[in-house]
Length: 436
Image (cartoon, rainbow, N blue to C red; front, side, top):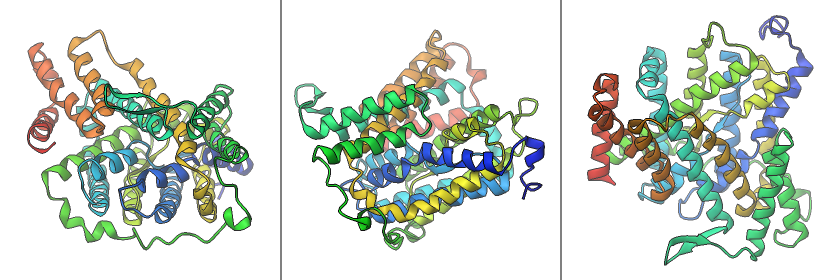
């Protein structure tokens, strides 16, 4: 075991790796409750219990593959942002059945695998300007934060101004505000797993104030693992439904966002762990394959895109250096399967702070955009702003990818625009004109 994970070479040991794996798990455990509430939100038709199990198993399998194959201390789980895109844009917004949406996730994962094995992934990643990548990440952050504000009742519908401030004297809204404050304080104090602990403290506060029904016994905390039957294999049964214009945009969105998340996260974690060599990521192909394989597994089980989590850096900060950190994290995700009854305690007011805070963290990429360049500022701004305003990640990406090549051409910089960007210009222009 020590030789397989190269403990001596990396200067680590079992105890350090175990603590690192536990730290990573606590930092991202919130997804176990946020993802089911997001995908099985009212109107989608998905089974919340099945999504909980799919979330935990997909995270465990994906993280285990990453640990054993790529041997990196990187954990995976269904990605924030793409789960919101899945529910609020694809299913609720466009009226696409959740089964077909899962087929789209499966298709994006299979394409990701092909691109990884053929080496085309580098070409595609390099063809998309870094500024637009940053804008997409920040826009998704604003989008999921907006959803969090809505779920908490802090922001509500207003006939006069479209949106407005909600009733801050409402008990549920006050609980969410309390959760935001607690989570912010924990993260400001650098508490590892601050988002998860914030949810726990908010849940306890809800029970004390009578806003949340407390568990009456052990059965309300630990219980049988929910069946995967309602979602398992649905992606295969509806794979033939993905060959439409709208589903092409859906698949491209799943694929691109996963590409950006994975590439950025792997570099961030590897850099923090000191695993980069000559500014390159060793075993990059295996790491990307692990990520894409996890997406395929998750889609078959019944969840949106599974991707690498930047929260893995918390485990690295605790000393994690090898793939054994990921093996430990995977084990905790499997252990968490018996805690499904807690879904009745973790309400939307409890998860809303997590959405808002994660949105804040994602929006930090705004600082890396070259705002002083007009041809960059316009598509970046439109990408970021349109996502929450149009309530659609795909529409935000489309706006940015349409305006970027046009403005670059008007500035006399057509040669700097990769041919793939012109292809995407045509695809997303067609989406905006004919499909949306």
